[in-house]
Image (cartoon, rainbow, N blue to C red; front, side):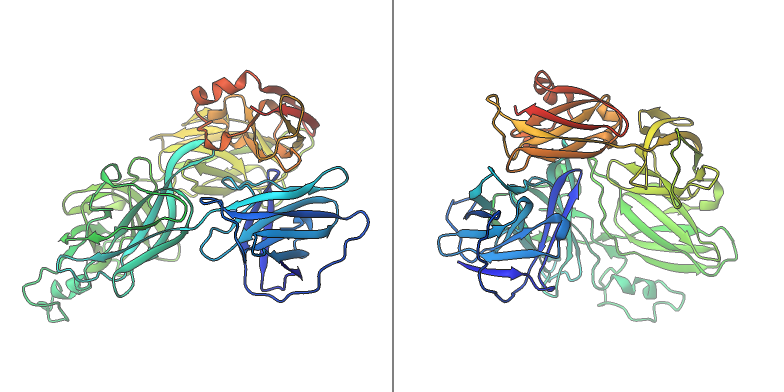
Length: 557
């Protein structure tokens, strides 16, 4: 086994505490090695073996990283020996982030789940030797996209979706995105085990010449081969050839799997949208972004290559869209650019006149501080959707706010929060939208007025996860659930117990909570009340006061 001292600047080990958990993001490169440190008094050892999580085989030549989160510039790395063993000696007492990286394997933190992991604790009476560090072989999805002539489709946009359990909910979300090369090939590497879907968007290579062929010069511009339809595009396609996620084939990957997902696409007629500009004589045109509407709740950030042509002053032709449901963002340039958002079910050519009606939704309100709390400069109100999209409005010195009238805030459910770390939302009320807890439901109303009360004084909960015989348990999911969690998700706090069973939940908003520790909680849809109900019988109830500090033991279930 070889050991290095501090890693040079070119080797990076980033650690971050978020709600009391340690998140590791590892990037690494070759570095030199220093002489092994000599153990001294009041120093400790962190040791263990790195193994393949699938086969259990010990792994040599794995880089193992150790970092004090408070001193991330002081990092160490060792390389495992032929038996997979690693050792950090002469380590001061404290909590440490531990990570590992090896080509062909996932870069990961110790006992990582979602964005959480277990810190390694050393000190008097606390041992951190003989750790078993399981790392996953990386999985791969690759494939080729060809057209109806079996020719490669270049520069196709390929999106990777993952069906995952995150934040106690099962959902399908974007995991990665890439583009096909000149051979029509794509590749997603370094994938964790799970269930994936692949979807693509593309246009035939000759489609960009459509505008020339349809122009007023009779098609004198450059064109594709004779007798080849040019006003075409490819449909948005889910592997292996579906047009909707419900009909797509899921790709279930175990650790280390290599799966091939090839596409064969056939062009369809490109549909056209004729957009009238607000000023009939305008000559600057507009830009259009089309986003496929969510299929089964999936937010597709899939770029669709469009072409806009000024037919005549005041009218823009948008082409390149296959049939489907889209959210259009139409931006008209000018001294103050104007943006219109419109949902369309596109099955044939359509006309859109953004100026025909006022599409704006005015969301405004006031913010009042409680007690002696004061809003910091630059504070703002945030609306956060279930898909993670955020809109923000700055709070004026007199406590007023208003969202941009043309901001993309479609109907749906939104959490209300502040963009500052030292204050929290106490209560929300309003008109024009349904308000429950810290969540609002925006429907068709064009005038929404909110009253928000905010305050300072976060609480902090520390403690230990223990077994029935009062022994500390590492790796348990710690869950702090507020009353009416469905409408107050922003109040939920989580952590993973460290190697000595301890946990920390900072920035807790005052209120009534239920505290739980679940050994295999990472596999539970715990936001479903029916799933969580059996665990509530042995949970701890706690009334959290403003600026309170708590130290609790919680039984691991």
